Image: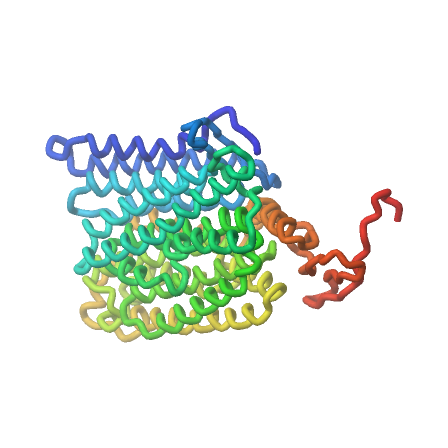
Length: 545
């Protein structure tokens, strides 16, 4: 761990939280109606500036937690204000701090902007706290806190069935989180029984010895909450309703940020705390991931509702993230982490465009949209870039993440990788069909009146398009920061499960399990994608050749 002289991460969380209080305290009647929007956007932009400063201060090549803040909160209960950031969480923090000001500026609401901006800032503080917390109690508190503003945003500013969607979302996620709380307490008490010290710090709990049954049960308790939040098939049934009925900002933040709390939780906590259970249950999670990819893609093909189409497309993309995670390979996990960020950028762009379509046409039903490309060519171009990135077109960010995920999965679980590849093909079908239906058909008189994107909307969407292209063309700066932390995590899983160390930066072949025998085989890299077996030779302690 490395500490910073300035408490970057503490300020990162407290800044939007304090901004929410300020927005809530500013009265509505005595100030211009746009005052709360200006304050909220200014706070969100300041938080983005701080996140950029953290990225600048971040040490490249160091896979440890950086800028750590660790203060005793409740000594007798073993709770610490413990924060840290590494390559896995860095870009999720940047993604979060980017999307919040963009939706505040580009998805404004007409009714009660004070409450709206306050809830968004509370949600931002909770999401950031979840991504940087290294104490499981504080992670749980932030993780749960995200439910409250999300519920009120959906219920307060959503569409016709917003009440039903908000309640369904809350009950699903709250129920899953109950298992997480039980799991956190169980891990802490088991650790206390072994060491005599009660603590909830991840760096201490990851060395707790768990039996096979204990590890599996606790893994399932943690994963229940993360699978609902992500969502992972078959825990996804709340998401189509929530995404469809939420306002544009709510849909962007639910799919772009809050869904990543689930996949991040799996990477950060499941792999660190339960490495043996992770390896034992990996085939089951890989199977759910592939089912989610194919099911999401096939159901998306049948949708005539653009928002629901994007919801099922998001389910398929989450499946790719889970696939890369449980490949338990450095390349696959690196691709999974990168795909969390890529998916956030892509789905945010698509939901923002759908929001523009609704503002202009009063619907997002494909049966009511025709030929908008002629009157709104810029909007059509933006949708095309995001659509192609989601399909995985080379040169755009979606290709890099999916390619790494599939390469990693092919090396460790080949048949799952082959099945997942079908999802890429099906994604091209439903996304191209949706584009053709809404933008390329012969326009109706109503479609010909569609207004194109104005300058303020271009400014809002430009950062997303630039990043989609930049990461696709030159992903090295991102990968250089993610890979050391991923390698460190994979090494921890391999060591805990008695697997031979892997090659540097995840480009070696998949090692076999060392059972201690003199003839235990080891896989080594050879040309192309083939591998060759060679006998395992014990290390010479004296260092002689």
